[in-house]
Length: 507
Image 1: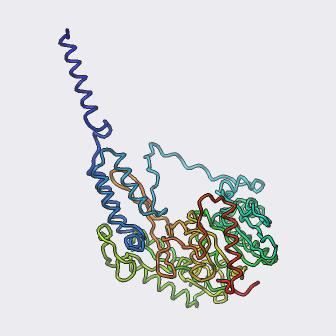
Image 2: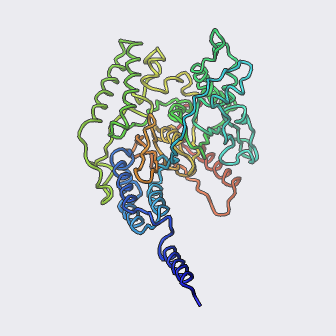
Image 3: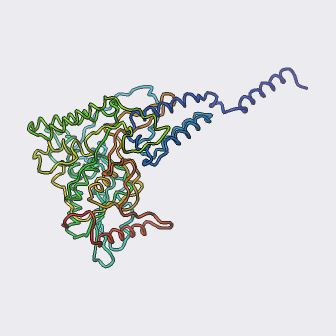
């Protein structure tokens, strides 16, 4: 027989069980679908305003059906029953662009206290390893080739990529009648190599009168030695009489502007940098224009008679002015697809080239290197241009991204190399001057959004990836050694053809 109290407890328990079991979990009771939908609206509006690749992906050439992606995201949010569902819907939307530069950043947790900044370390001239580590110089984490060329018969290693920035070797065919030089560029970060830092650390000119480390000269010395080390590998190839050079940028996630600068070492042809465009959003792009205008003013101060500096400065002023001009709306991208070419709205503004204000500068046109490098960044290594002058091939794969894509693209654009392997990953240009991320008001999700575009010679966006001139696609059941041999076979076969492709006079 139940008592009054037991009947009340039983009823309360039943009510509680009903509350917990009849609907979504307790954490989902506070789920605010409208807030997540508003976050999505905010994200799309931000992309319309500042995403440099949006017009490309809204075109049939871009390979993505944005209206369909939008419908899927709206449907996912409409059927969401928890914050986890909302989060998944937005992240799936971002992944749908297949643009590695457009990606999520860690959500920030507000700090409860702000600690005092630590004191600047005292660098010891006798402890280069510790000092270089403190300054973020480190060994590259992928010095090995992207394919195991070392395991093939006829291969001879000439640089290990551990104590030096580059791994390199010479691979000969079985008859020893033809060989190619293979150099691995694991990362396009010319001022972060640990070994070069330790080498420069011992130089007297890296230290001030009071024994203080001169950090800017140190980084410039490392940068200079990085290019010199690469040129040294190419000279070794020349001395060995190789028939061609294969540059391995497979599994290379990118780096900095050295992707464009480095290309000049591999050819004597005039290499023009890709046209650079910036998003027509002043808050995102103005800092880059201001930086370049400051550099051009410096160039004019160093050489007041330089007509090139004056005309470049005037052009940049005009281009910056377009940031504040009226522009078209981009909300159409969620309803329809429009061709990339023609009159399609892009919200992009010309911004010189991927090599600076000028796309090309003859090495002998300006004697003052400090003036030249403000106009065309590759001028900093002009004495090394054309170190290699023979047939050139660039090995790429679907993990070749960003600055590594820039390297492959600029050589292909200028007819200076043939690309071999697989289409690159398709990140293209990422960020100029590190624009602020987009932060969504409800979820506090944070996304970095690219603000620049590098144009290919055919007028397409580099974010589409670099298609190989000589495809060498993976085959079922194939191991790395077999594929490495297929690459070598394709390159040597191409060298034997009457037209050796994009080569200058042989060394």
